[in-house]
Amino acid sequence: MPHRGSLMPDKEMIISHSLLETRLAIVEDSVVSEVAFERERSRGVVGNLYKGRVNRVLPGMQSAFVDIGLERDGFLYVSDVIDDEDNLTEEEERIVETEREIRAAKKSSTQSIDELLKEGQEVLVQVAKEPLGTKGARITSYVSLPGRLLVYMPTVEHIGVSRKIESAEERSRLRRLIQETKKRPGGYIVRTAAEGKDDEAIVADLTYLENKWVEIVEKSEHVKAPALIHKDLGLVFKYIRDVLSPEFSAIRINSEELFDQVLNYVRQIQPQILHRVKYYSKNYPIFDEYGVQSEIDKALRSKVWLKSGGYIVINQTEALVAIDVNTGRYTGDRRLEDTITRINLEALEEIVHQVRLRDLGGIIVIDFIDMEERRNQNKVYAALEHALKKDRSPTKSIQINEFGLIVLTRKRVKRSLERVLCRPCPSCQGSSWIKSPTTLAYEIVDQVRKDLVEYSKGLTLRVHPELARALRGKDAPAMEELKSILHNDVDLRSDHNLYQEQYELVARK
Image (cartoon, rainbow, N blue to C red; front, side, top):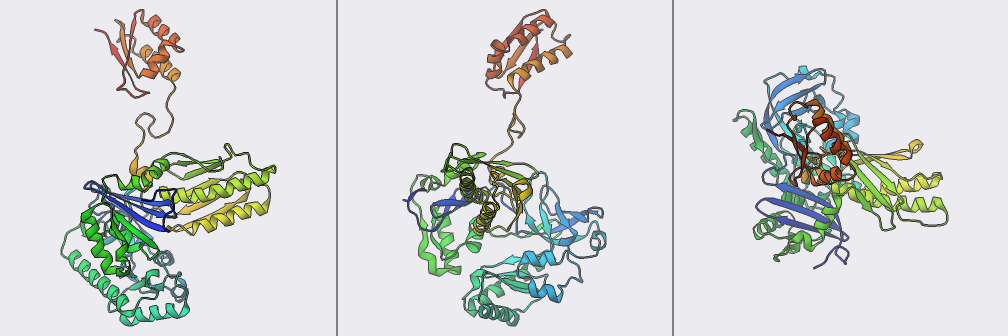
């Protein structure tokens, strides 16, 4: 079996499935480029349709909170609320081709949120972004139902064709076919996978999506809010629907049950690559077999080493992601400018890889090593733009030469890899810093001073072993100070069950 670092086919999908969790990885040219997780206790909700009830309308924020039955209310912006008079202008009809562009074109609505929604009103909405941190799900009333070849938008009258379909003749054929075939109100986006497909396959996808919408509407009319109306496909089938193409040489699955389900699904949508679905029968974990687990472990560290000896540091915060490029051990060429440019060029490839692997979103600020020559700055920026074309998620870059920074904005739909697999450190509360033993020693002295009467008969001090060593060594003066103010002995005890910043003061009876 091939491993990372050995010769592998161009693209493979690796799927690890158990009763508790499903994990999926995409490997491109022997490099793990994407990973995704779905846990049975916390399945994703993006794409799901809900009948919700408006709880609060906030004119000052031009938004509303809608109860859709999740832990937190969904957040609905005014631009995501359907207006009965919503229509694209002739100019917008001519230039927009994607669902995202259609929504952007509609953001000029002049109506206020309190004119469109009232508290207690029931609305049909779709989840556009997963709940993140303390924020509820981002929802929209512009529904989109994705199929293999088409995306149906029942609330928008527009037909767009993927820009990746370059042939003018093919674009016209597909647009004309949709216009002549569709039987219900609404619009369509023709996906890249539809290129070259015969009319029968495209019409079948269209009919399926329109019938699905009829089912959704009928169900929504007979249930009370809040209620789940339609659940999108699970992780594996969503990836197969949206990502799988003839470029994939294999889909490897470790579960016999899921293998059979995937076989049936691929037989329906892409029978020509059915033979590439492979059952992995070894007991050895499939993610370890194909080098995926080691890449996940590395992606949870802030420092990433480059082959040259340089490194990048990635820090996620609530507001943005900061990425810093450093020379590290790399000494390079005689000419410093060439050395710096070479490190920056190597770093940007790894940065794009890590952004995709970690699924970083929102604002991403990259601090490259300063280059003096404008041609080298342009060279690095152009190389970054080229590398970003590999990314499926919409990403824009802005060059800010005055500060030597490049800012990326990347669409954030779900939580990053770190947020999925980790939780804030209970000792440092997610800050990555904890108080030093000396600081804690002085803090304990102050705490005893405040409650001096309580500890007048003596004190038992339970601390983490590292702090205990410090109090017996370099911070022993703090222990002497405690004895001095108490006029009594202090019983110092080491406790492995305590966090490094945690301590307990127990008064003697």
